[in-house]
Image (cartoon, rainbow, N blue to C red; front, side, top):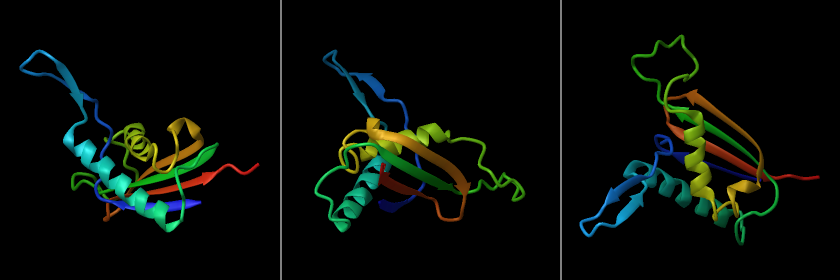
Length: 135
C-alpha cells in the first residue's frame, strides 16, 4: 500500500490551451496553475516511491482513494459541512491521475476501483492511498 499527502491548494485539471504561433503552427499547453500542481504531486509521489523502495510504477489492478481538503470560503456558513460548489470533484481527480501516470502506476487504466471525496479543512491538501487488488 502507498499512502502520501500533497500539501497545497488542490487545482482541478484545466483544458489544454491552444495557441497559434507567429509562424502559423498551433501548439497546445497545460495552463500554469495546473502544471505546477501536477509537478507538486509528482515530486511527492517520487519521494514516497523511493521511501517504499519501489523500483518502478505499479502494474495490474489497483484501488485508489483520494480525499481533497479545501479551504472553506469566507462566504460559506460554518453550518454547511460539504463543499458542494466548485471545483468539480472529477476535475480534481483527473489532475491527480494524470500526474501519477508513469510514477505510481503504469497507466490510470489500471485503476479498477476508486473513491474520491471533498472536505473542508484549514490545511488544503490531497491524501492519496493506492493499493494493489489482492485476489
